[in-house]
Amino acid sequence: MMAFFQAMPVVIEAEQFTDENKNRVFHFITCTREASRDHQGNPVLLIQTLEGVMTCRIGDWVVKGLKGEFWPVKPDIFAVKYKAIDQDQEAA
Image (cartoon, rainbow, N blue to C red; front, side, top):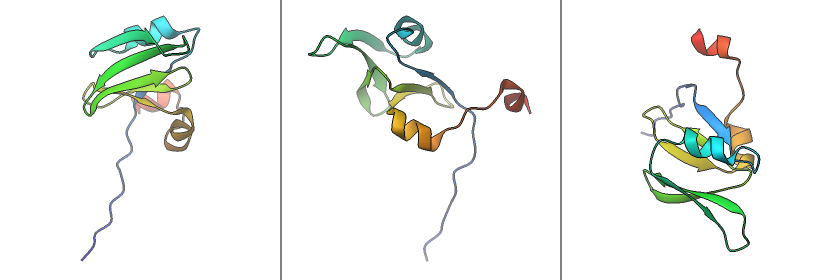
């Protein structure tokens, strides 16, 4: 018999990787990461994730998971999966 489950709601931290805040995002990530440039000269971050090294490009979001892990998320996927909350909600 098939069972169905719904993910538990959790609060995560995330930063969008932009040209203006690339240094802040680099320091937000506490796992192994490397700043680099793609073949067109655009800044990228290479982030060591649980699934291997992933490339974070300008516009992507960097998400910090419940156990301190980090991974990049494309902006269209981020917009569907996450919504902003105010910090008062987080404390509740």
